[in-house]
Image (cartoon, rainbow, N blue to C red; front, side, top):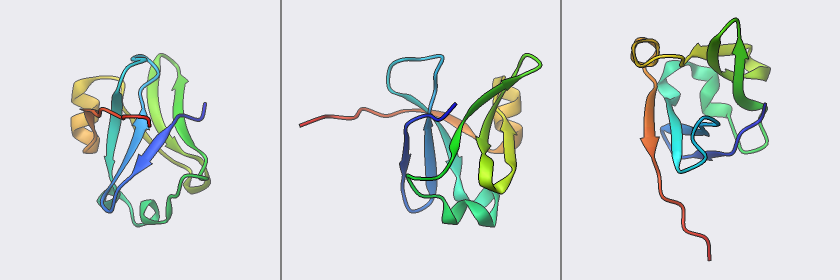
Length: 87
């Protein structure tokens, strides 16, 4: 499942499908050197398998468990609220 994402110099933000608002998973690019190559065309999204939720970077074959606050913390990922204004 591909989700909307925002990219800053040091972080990738991936939309949280459980919250249709402005909540994103905040993934620091410092977690893996391949994350520095991620752009808006990359296959990035949320995957659910065996009752666990993962942020996935398909072409890197890199998946981080974000099911619970503890698993997010262990993986260095946070939930972030971002307000996006459309013109």
